[in-house]
Length: 416
Image (cartoon, rainbow, N blue to C red):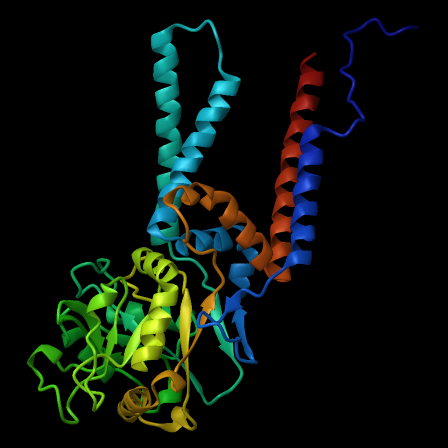
């Protein structure tokens, strides 16, 4: 007998537009790998030393879509952050205009659109808060040469006025260890008590753990400098062996760099070529050539600084110093060797390796392209393990969506 019951919905065998979109995204990830670029660069124009690579813990690779996007956000300058948020708002506005519903009461329409903008801003703020505050796996630097020391010349704790509450010396040590640093100077603003206490907790031999060295950041001759020691250059004679090793920090006024005297004392012996704070990244991008010119003319060591105050989980750059046998030295002796190498070796003493980023150059309006430029830089610097993780997450997520849709369709059939 013919069936006279309710009609059973017919499932189309055609490929849904969403499936084509997912396939296009996966294909884009694979094709971008053909244009892959090394995730590490030498910001002074040289090459990355052999045996120096970017490493990822297993948890980072599992969470690659989250970790790599948060890293990309953390490597933006202030102007790029502003450009990214403004471009997102503009894109949302264009989408709402194209999708706009007519015939609704004006007041209801305005309130609805304002609510949408507020929700979008809340999502953006939540993403930024998560990137800055929520602990996550960190990419780290791997160095094969056991005689190469990986260190940071400029970091802070909660003792600085702009340090994150709770970012203790122990937290500073853990952050540097996770990023692949073997040593770091704590250079809190003016205060040295936390740095001295942290140095007292170093292991007996330098190779037995991540080291923290004492230093300070002060205003000297109207410029912020870090001293790789607890000496205050404002109250130290500008001659003699007691003069501390000073490094010019960025951002700063490059026309006021404290110039050393003929004997190499009385001024800075190094300058930051990379400062990982958003403002620092902006100036080192815009004034890159000028900084290199100053470093060359004054024979200053070119260094990198995390400038970390406890915000974020991304290392932007590392300093490499080749010091044979450093692992067997007591930390106090290693501190002296580091300072001596920089004071006398200058540019030959330190080599910088940094994460590849797109730079802030050109007029301010270019910052509106921060979104697509960040996306392209992210796509071409992903390693293949990260790329595979991205593809796996996309396919798993879309598979879950298809499964939920199938269950909903089955429920509709039974209800019919």
